[in-house]
Figure 1 (cartoon, rainbow, N blue to C red):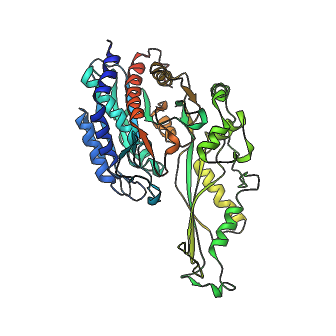
Figure 2 (cartoon, helix red, strand yellow):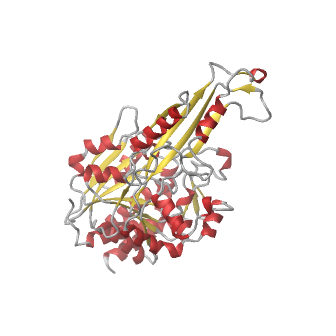
Length: 464
C-alpha cells in the first residue's frame, strides 16, 4: 500500500472523530457581518492549527476589523510550499424560521450535517485540517504548508491587503495559493469544478431620508416618500433589457481569451439549462440565455447590479399608515478582470448626480478586482489529477462567479490561486446549508491527494 492509500484508509478510520470535530467547529457562531462569535472562532482556529503541530501561530488583529489566523507547518524533505487560504467567517442565518434544524446545532439529518458554514466554508476548512491530521498519522506531509485563515471574507476581505503586507516575508516562500472549498453546482450537473480564478466584487449601501421622523400617511400629499426616491434612483441604473445604464460601466470588460474559450468549450457539454432552473426554482433563465452565451454571461460579464436587500418602514402584519423617514438598500456588483472597483463605484455615484439623485447617499467598500489563473499551472493540474484519482470526472472553470480575493494574492505576492473541493456550493448563504458525511470524507481525501499531486509536479514555470 503506497502512502496515499494509507492516508485514504486512515481518513475512513477517522470518520467518527472527524465528523464530531466538524460539528464542534460549526456549532461555534462566526458571523462577520455582526461580529457574533468572531473572536472565539479565531482563537479556536488558532488552537486547531497548534493541535496539528503548526508553529508560529498568530492571531492578527485589526482596528475595526476581525482577526486573521496565520501559522506554518513544515515537513522534512518537502520541497514545495502551499499557501492555504480559507475563511472562518460565515453569513447571517436569518430567516431563522426557515431552518429545519438549528443553524448552530450542526445536527445530523439523513447523513447531512446541517449548519451555517457547512459548505461555505467552515466545513471544507475542517476537511482540509482533518486531511492534514490523517497524513501526519500515516506518513509525512508531502508539502510544506502556510495557513492564512481570515474572518472577513464575507466582508470583501477588508483587511487582507494589510495582512499580506504585514506577512509579506513569511509568505514569500510559497509556490501557490490553494483554497479548499465546495465547487459542485447545477451549472455542470454537480461535477466538481476546479476554479481558475474568481470574479471581484464591489458592495454598495444606499440611503434616502425624507425627514427626521415618520409622519402619518394622511400627510403623504405634502411629505416626500424616501422609498419612492430610492426606487426611482435604482430604476435609473438598469434598463428593461437588464443592461446597466451607468455610463462607463462596461468600458473595461475584456472578451474571454482563446484559453478561456477552450476551458468553456469543455464545460459546455455539461451545461443543462433545465437542471439549473430546477435547482434554483426558476421558470426561466434571465434573458433567455443558453449554451455558450450563458457561460460567457456568468463568467465574463458583471452582474447587472444585484439589489440584495431593502429596509424601510413597517413590515409586520396588516397596514400601519405612515410615511417612512428613511430607506436603505444594499447592492453588489460582481466584476470581471480588468474592471476596477474604484472606477465602478465612481461611475455609479456620478450617474446618480447626473440624473438628479444627489439626495441619495452612497457608501461603497473598496472591494477587489477579478483575476485568472492559467489552466496549465502546476496547482491547476494537481487539482484536476487529484479529482481524477478519486474517480471523478472534473472540469476546469475559468472564473468562480462568487467572488474571492484572487487578485490580492496575484498583485501582492505574484502567486497563482486555484479552488477545488467537494460539496454542493449552491447551498451557500441560504437556510438549511449542509454537507453530507460522505462529501466531508471525500473532501478530506481530495485535500490529501491534492497535496501529494502538487508535490509531484516538477515542471513549475518560473514566476515573473
